Length: 263
Image 1 (tube, one colour):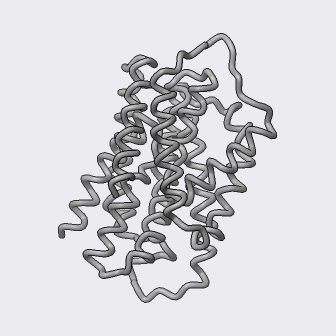
Image 2 (image 1 turned 90 degrees about the vertical axis):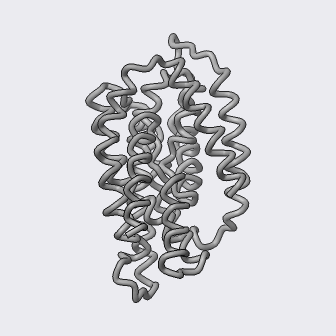
Image 3 (image 1 turned 120 degrees about the vertical axis):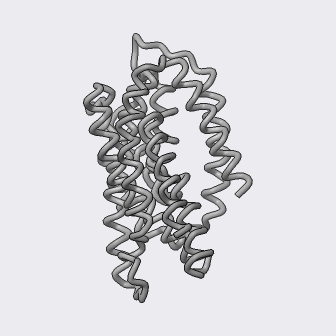
């Protein structure tokens, strides 16, 4: 009974994060699912982490779809920009399912912590020039999308922590950057989930609560409550100035970096 309660409250936080900042919730889902499996199901840490990441990516398909719809309704998604990144994002996400067991997680984690602190500082101090966008060519954008997608998939996040500050740095308004990143996060979650599920077909599981590497109770009790708060918080975003959104996002990055550093 304790595990579903933990998932429900975590789902509420995920919904708020998805609506306000475009985050897929992986930074909450991965540790919650991982440690729940360790303490409640006695699953070894090495397996629990993979299941946590896979469950997070599957959850992003639902929360990302809801967040994308809400932000589209509020005219905060730039689909032209999405097209510049989409090919690289899809290729990177599909590759995740094949490399997730090969790369040392501590290297990715340390890189991500350094990146988070650096971008938090740059985002907080960046002055947006709305008169000109400085996004690179489609080729360079797809390379960036490819690497952002791989990092996001391996860590189990939607990509907003990478895409939002990058788009803001390239003179996109904060709210539009958040909505656009939500749509890119949905693509990452969908493609990576498909790839990881195909990879899981070669693994044998006797746990009836598992669908491949996806932990079904987490999807039920964690993801569904988040969908309610995604729509609410996406509307709250409209009432906050771009400058304050940018500062709040930088504060969130600092908190994320500290949590990952202390984990």
